[in-house]
Length: 149
Image (cartoon, rainbow, N blue to C red):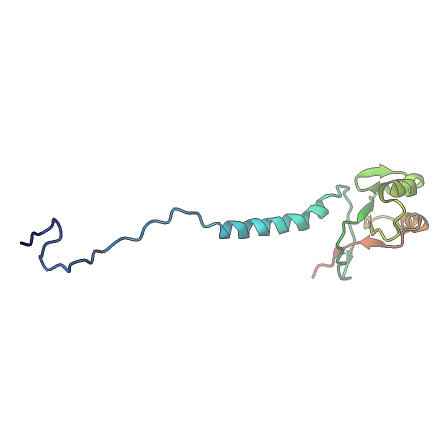
């Protein structure tokens, strides 16, 4: 009374065991994509503050360690011609303090970076730093490139 089913007959095959192929994975593995995007985000977060100042200044070299700063500082640049810029806005020395007070107010703990051209007279850079410190801002620093090894 036994009937052979189609494809299930003898012929030396073991009954009930068929080889099944693994199903193709149709989902996208997003872990590598997230890793790459996080690395790109960090690179752009680090590079963005460096791109904000567009005044061309040939900075001097120094072997001093870099300052780790959590907040973005205000940048005052002095180019090779002795012209003064706050961020990218050109300003005269007489208008420097009022412009700084308009931008950052009366916060003496605000970090201010002074970028001076390497070929510029040292007295001009000190004149700018003197104006900034005379206004009451105490955290004034000079910016230099790391020394080449």
